[in-house]
Amino acid sequence: MWGEIESLLMAINSVTWLSYLAASFAAVFLVRDLSFKATLIAWSVADLVNLVFTPILFSLSEVDRELARLVWYPAFSMLSLLTIFFIYQVHIKASIQVSRFSKPIVLWLLMMVALNVVRFFDRVVFETNFTSELFKFGLLAVKVWASVAVWIYLYQMCSRSRRAA
Image 1 (cartoon, rainbow, N blue to C red):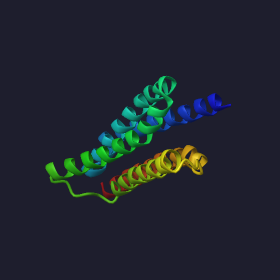
Image 2 (image 1 turned 120 degrees about the horizontal axis):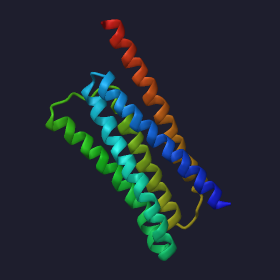
Image 3 (image 1 turned 180 degrees about the vertical axis):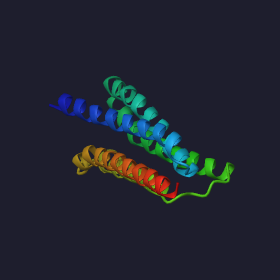
Image 4 (image 1 turned 90 degrees about the vertical axis):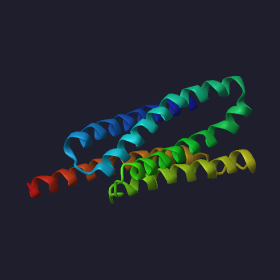
């Protein structure tokens, strides 16, 4: 059963990443907001790293289940935190004002960190395993929600650009 769920989650994860990638390309050509472009591209690259890194951690769990359990949640938390830091640095170095469309992406990354930290403490530290379903479907829900919202933002920005022209 877990194999089927794992396959479904990986497929949806791949689709959300493709959605971010398509949105990044669309943003480069259709949107003037440099903050949103930079944030979306950084997020897409980080999600690609996440997508590549996941099977590696799955294979690690076949070799050493305990080590994989200890590394899994902190690794993905660090990736999200590094993405936030990179987004911040790009805005500082390029003197870009943070747009209202970039802030939700950073918020979603912080939500991913929070979910990973809560799951780590639940599974590894306290060994209660209360949050397994929340983690499994919560991460996916955040990614799908974020993907839909990004496309809505793109539509709104393109509509505004057309009206202004």
